[in-house]
Length: 213
Image 1: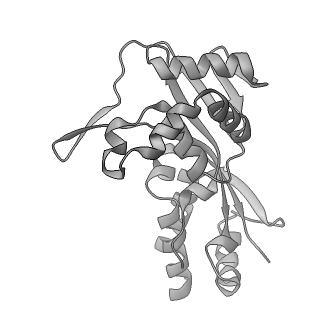
Image 2: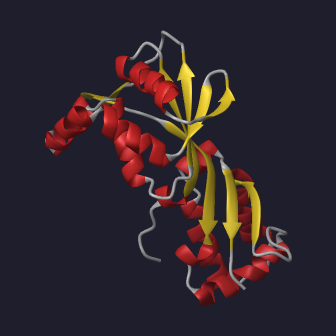
């Protein structure tokens, strides 16, 4: 398997902006005033990556130019919300929507200690993702793993199914522990479990799994 970027799986993510952070509050206000967003609830809206990119380019051109001039070794120390959103839009190239959640909490910190150095850390939550097997496995590998997916009732008569990342991981573990499967199928399950590990396992988003016949 070639190097796989989990960011390319993500369809919808949730980003929290804080009222008492200058740039967060400014970005939130401009989103409300300038974008044709969808309301999720009183404190959350849904925007497209295209809308957010236009908003950043239109309102924060100077800040974006400054970010591009910061040395790589300093970027994580000096980064702000504009840098973070710009990086999300660059790295997550298949996003369909971004949920922005506005927090009125006064008590928050994005400062973390890494190797005796204080840095700024921004977080997000993955809400929905798509696991396309043909982006990870060869066609022969897909043919080999489909019978296992069918026996686990992950797929039935359609080439896709929906479930949480946690549920998929538990089913894959069940197959490894209880099913009579080949060494090749074991290796393929290990690859799929590795893809779903870390951020996806922690956030436990809804996963659309798509296979081929």
